Amino acid sequence: MVRLLRPFGRVVTYTRLLHLCIVIVWPSMLLFIKEAWWTWVLAAALLAPVGLVPAMRSVEGLQARLLLTGHRQDSGSTGIVVTPSASWGDRARLVVWLEVRLLLGCATSMFTFQLLLASVDLVSSAFGRDVEEGALLPLEGHHWWHVLLAPLSLGALALTVVGSGHLITALAHRLLGPSPAERLAALEERTEQLLERTRIARELHDSIGHALTVAVVQAGAARAAGDPAFTDRALEAIEETGRAALEDLERVLGVLRESGRPVSSRPTLTDADRLLESARASGTKVDIDMTGPLDTVPGPVSREGYRILQESLTNVLRHADCAPARVRVAVADGTLTLEVRNPLADDIPGPGRGSGLRGIRERAALLGGHARTGPDQGDWQVHVELPLS
Image 1 (cartoon, rainbow, N blue to C red):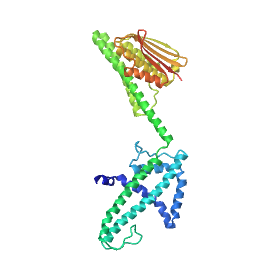
Image 2: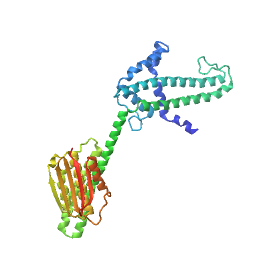
Image 3: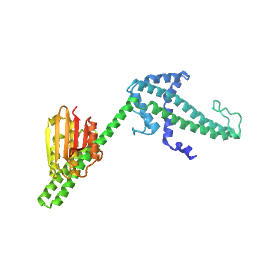
Image 4: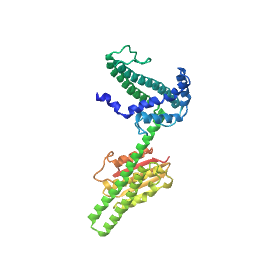
């Protein structure tokens, strides 16, 4: 019983009824001019050209979203759009919506009013009062049992109010919902957001992971060396690496706060010197061979190349016990080639282990390139090729 009465405790039940009643206000004004059946036909005919106006979709969408769902703004759950009509298909659906809303509004208003009057007439008849002509239920005589029929009339009234509200809401989702083109655009936007979040996660992993690895290696080496001069150099390297990581963290958080912020401030391969200096300060001997015009590498490729190089050097520090590394960066024949090699350590990560290695392969795949990671001729190799186009 409580479940049946629950809809009448919700505000949206009554706003849906209001939404249906509003639509018959202006056609009812025509009845003051001429009380005839063709006034409703005229009202329905006038709605057709109105539905062809693109802005009417926004007007109807806002009304439906507020009165039928209770949402002022799109929360992703209403399924009702408020943008103007962008195609003739949108206009056609809006015309159908206006006609259906008028028809359902007329029927709901009539039955609601008549059923309410019927309940009053049944009670009045049971107490000996005459019922006026034109009532929904023709009552002859005055019988006490008429009052027993009043709950049935009230039940039908409740069913009409709730049922018509659910029906008009379902039609609104169908006729005022996004078109296939809009659904595709929303899906593409959602995909872009997910890709951006994945990229930011990689940014944090590469930057913060590199800084923490350098700090741990430097701290361990300084403690083992027991040399004040070496300790000073280690602390300086930790400080510089930490400052760079904080800058990267601030930039990434800025991207999260401002979705429209450009990514041009991200480091590129032209900033690779700070990576090499950080690795060398950690005790790793790094030999680098750079060929080709790095300044001509497109921004997205250069930025992702920087992160790939950063993750590769981090793996050397983390897994190869600061073994000497050989870095090759080449730009030739429309391809950027990155290669980092170091002698194999005892603890060799498998080809599919480690989020860093997966990140390298994912970055390369997103740019249309490919990456190879694993043992090669007595060395551990990271070899990445990225197309420049």
